[in-house]
Image 1 (spheres, rainbow, N blue to C red):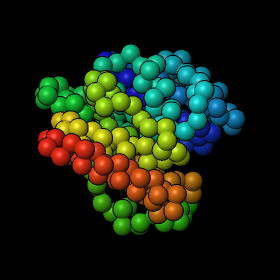
Image 2 (image 1 turned 45 degrees about the vertical axis):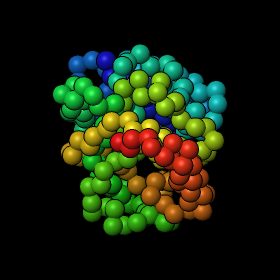
Image 3 (image 1 turned 45 degrees about the horizontal axis):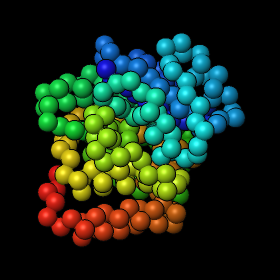
Image 4 (image 1 turned 60 degrees about the horizontal axis):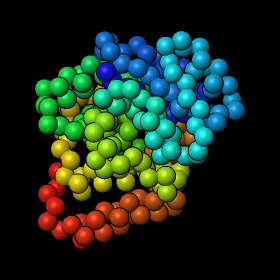
Length: 230
């Protein structure tokens, strides 16, 4: 079974569209766990309008804590992750799960992604417009499918990375640990860019957290210089 963990906090504006793209997957065996980060905008009512979805209230704060909360609540051996404003094609889970099944030694995989600008909105400050034309490798949570054993091996998400960059740190730890991964070269994530987006922006807080993740990776490599890299 695949467990899809969706994290949301006050995401009412785009949440229903994201949930529809998740619950409409053609994969035969999956569950959806939505972690609500103490929303106050009616998000909870939208989530509870989907009878098959499991609703989990987040006691802590931040996206890293939300992902960890979802992992603890999930039942599946394969874990996938979703944000409240992005979209998946209906075959995302089936394609990625098949890709993993054909490669039993893989511990996680990511897919290609495509950015799209929300109609009627300007890109947020710092967004690189050239990203709208490409199909980059999605080293982000919404493009990830991982075996639960990966989290047993390298741990969950570091809540010190607040409010963002927890995914950058997690991928760096997985790479530094030599965890086997592969890229499914198909666009299976549509990442929405809108006025409240934090993705692909160059704010000082984001840059500082990315620098912290990089420094931590360098320190790990110095501590274990002979460790095989994945």
